[in-house]
Image (cartoon, rainbow, N blue to C red):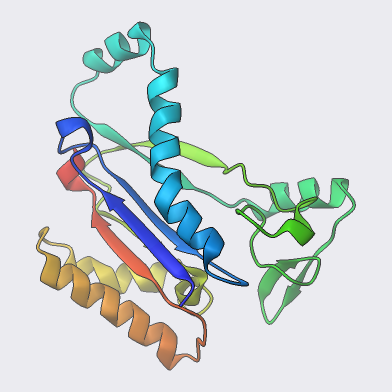
Amino acid sequence: MEDRFSALTNLRGDRKQAMFGVYDGHGGVKAAEFAAKNLDKNVLEEVSGKCDESEIADAKDVRGGSCCVTALRRWHDERERIETTGGYVDTFNGVWRIQGSLAVSRGIGDAHLKRWVIAEPETKMLRIDQDHEFLILASDGLWDKVSNQEAVDIARPFCVGTEMKPLLLACKKLVELSASRGSSDDISVMLIPLRQFI
């Protein structure tokens, strides 16, 4: 199995601060292990280093709330970036691939594709509010066989509390669905109730 994960909660003694990650290795487990071991620490150092007193003061003026940082893929922008540097993107069995090979455009490792696959994540900060129920982090072993809406529909009934058992059951159901549809990839799923961070 090449997938790895990390979950850090109660960061800096604050129950509203946490960091989660699912790392999908390919061509070996080393890059996923490296990311799981180091990425959280590096992101925290980067965020801590960029906070200044004015940002802290601004944060105190906000009534409650917290934020969630997730990687986003916008294929039209990514495709343009890749093609501008001499690469190509095409589909194989409904999955977009770079140079006919890799199904991600940003990642750690992949030295033979470094010209097109960059390690810098595309991120977006979203303030969590009552409308944000949960976050599903998963490897492509899930997303290649299960749509976003299907995953939400399966997970939602299990997300009424923060108990581990129902959340684990939801993850297992998602893994089973992907496997039943023929996924032969590693399937890692993490389900995070978000209202606990408000």
